[in-house]
Amino acid sequence: MAVEVVQFLVRKYVDSLAEEEAAAELPFRAHFYDVKAELEKAAISSTNADELRQCLYELNDLLAECRMLASRTNTRPGCFSPSEAWRSNRVKTRVIAVKRRVLRCVESDSSGNAAALEEEDSAAAGFSRWTTSWLEEGTVHGFDQQLAELESMAFGAECGAGGLTGVGIVGMGGVGKTALAQLVFNSPRARRRFFPRIWVCLSRTACAGADVRKEVLQSMLMALGLEEEVILSMDGGNGLGEMVFAVHEQLKGKRYLVVFDDVWNVDGWYADVVGRRNASPTGEEWGERLAFGLPKERGGVVVVTSRLEQAAETMVGKSSLHRVQPLADGESCWAIFMDAFSKERRPADVTTVNNMKDEIIDTCGGLPSAAKTLGDIFARSLSSPASTSSQELSKNR
Image (tube, rainbow, N blue to C red; front, side, top):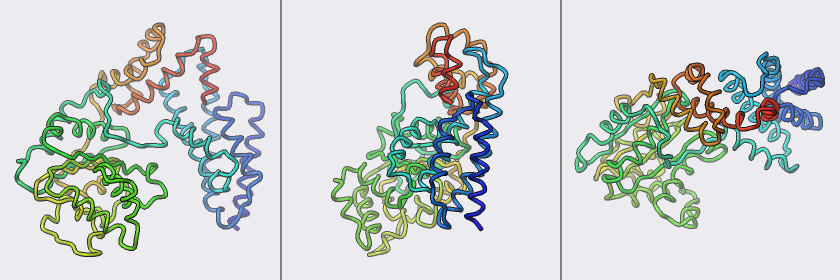
């Protein structure tokens, strides 16, 4: 029955595209037709039917949303609302994500499409995410007070008191959790007081398909300077325990700072990483908890960022959470927008954008990532000659 449902949904999708045949302005039509070509030659079976069904439900919804985007009335060159630009960018991200899922589901990687799709994924804002400790100078605005509060939480304890200090930075996506963690990680106080400083990204997209626990430990060991061959050799029957023990030995006697950025799914292995001060595991017990790899005798700081408050609470405790709020100062969002926009703009573009300042600030909703993404979108769209900018905008869709 599941196969028949998918076959019906494929026909519905193909018929919907046929209705759009004359609509050359359908946003992202190339992506939709790539998916159509793969679906028409796909072998649908009970093993891929459930995933394909979900993809097709979303594809038909996206087609309807793209029709609404195409029917917008404001088509003058270089003139479009910030809300439309933001919505278009998010829809494109979803279309590429579903296209990737379909290709994987029908096992089309051998066709060469997968490599091209990976490149598209990297270009799609917000889909593929990998964070580092690197912070671009002068691009963070509006966080002074929150940074002072976080530094007080992280660095307020005496250095020689022993034990670990945990800080959980939580809030909605795009609110600036990673930026705040980067500011703490790179602050003069952190540089003076902690060595080593380790940054570990736990993004869902960065760790897709991997044993995340091993990914975490391997990242830490590489940051601590172990050779890749040595790390990869720890993959026997108790490989996890070997790696936890190796992390512990590398950090023993040191005052360190570790950031676990973009934490999603956690279980008992991640629990209470700042506790268990006097735990003395033996043998296979080393692999049972991440906390065993983090020695407590010299003191240190563990920072966790997550959209899921429960995940951060599991790792560092409820009393150690800092809830990041959207920026209340619209000028800070404007400064972030202009930083992104000014990288590629032409001088004549400033007047166009300044006339939309209030609308842009409202569209950002206090979210730094929204301000940056809008700046990038406007920079690409308004960098084309005025006579062709609307065509370019359609092409990018």
